[in-house]
Image (tube, rainbow over all chains, first blue to last red; front, side, top):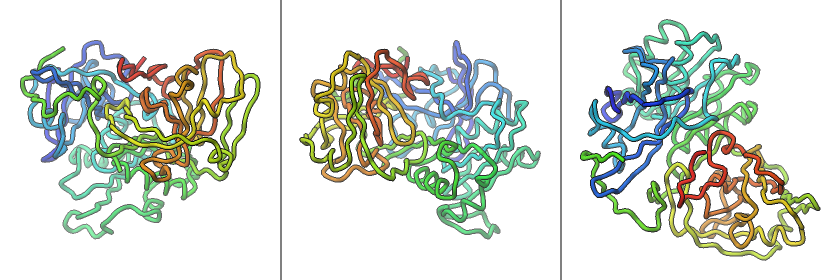
Length: 241
Length: 192
């Protein structure tokens, strides 16, 4: 059941769900959301969790049976418009999961972690950042966040506050427009910029790359080209080509 | 089942779509890491009684089949009326005897997936190298991928390197991470 919601941008919303019988949840996992219309028609979509018990958002703690997911409303979407614009606290929601055992981070992992997000792909990486901040682990974390323009940034206040506290660093790149006063290259990441913004191969970091397909393909290929071991690069993609 | 007054279906259920699937016009890409860099392609087909190793030229010299069919991904999209070209697993296993009932497909890059041999033989599975008349692109598993369209598409291992029969149904990559051992979309065998 939906127990809360808050807007992240003009087109994205974080939804808090209370899940009966929620078992162990690892940051990076997703849930399948199934909607059923009055005529019996059903639609299922997968959404990454953006916060899990043990890694709550700064605004409020999460109960042991609560998770959050962040949904971007797609213009031609079938499920996302309801989740962003229709679902209200108190509404039931049918979900399956949490699912996924690959694109996950465990706080027992000792190595540095490099998160690389394209747009709304930041959601599962935020779950990892939150779990890292709340847990006992000491692994250094970095987030590289590629976004269209400043207004598209999810979790803006929370990222800024967590950055100030010094637990990790965030590098932002803007593909269309940077914030006023920021002089930086506008445009997609190339290998040279990527190399300057992520852990070097000698750091032995694990990479988690999530975003639109083209972004993930380009970034993961560039990382391999920079000498990172392919086995250290985990990817999660959405969208077609 | 819960009814949602706020959710009005915009699309009619299509009888060609298995339960819980939606129609996708694009071709989403799912992969656990970077595309593997394949220096020299070779395909291994092996049972407990023998093995074959095929070069790219050997593979292309085998009888080629055209397959027109639908594909279904466990992440809920289905693509209807796709066209592929490749070599039947019946052809690839021709001459190799086995008493095994299962097989593991292995890919360049380390991916694995397990299947009953009954789902690979009998005109149900191929190794394909063309999609819609074009060479299969790397992001979709090129130069060649396993193609088992009657099962969820994670069974159709991209960048396939070999298929080895086995006496027991050992889980592959996703199957060891909670996905179903079989993966029939019409039975919604998504997760174990």
